[in-house]
Image 1 (spheres, rainbow, N blue to C red):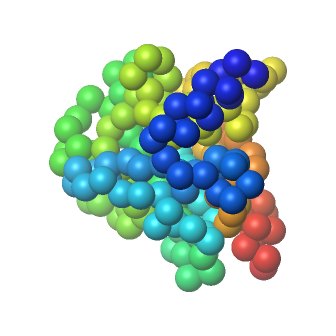
Image 2 (cartoon, rainbow, N blue to C red; image 1 turned 60 degrees about the vertical axis):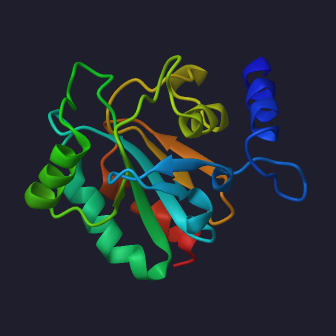
Length: 182
């Protein structure tokens, strides 16, 4: 609870609130893989899947499933936001440019990718502090345990579900369809 209070207080000084003073994913900014700061308000009204990704992980093949979901539902208001992180066994050691090239050439990734970030610890980006406060992991833990943890966000910017690394993208499709009204 204290964690959530501190998050809300910090946001009061750094972002806007909705009219009922609740925080949503739209209150955050992040730098895309090319270093441009993006307001996540850009995604307002879309169903989002936010994923911490890595290029040298046993789950890296999930890029293919993520891209398939994106292509299938992007015209219905679905977007994937990929956040590379090197916090798990040095499995994302490359530069942002190298990550972008790998994703494009190896998996044809066309969904939005962001710069390499920390998703846990003192240097974690505020977006991940928020995501973890809204949807805990196994047994209520907050920390991201591994690469390819996924957060499903509704069109109103609220986190509705957290999926662990072992959950394949195709297993989330029914939840995405439900939020899209399909």
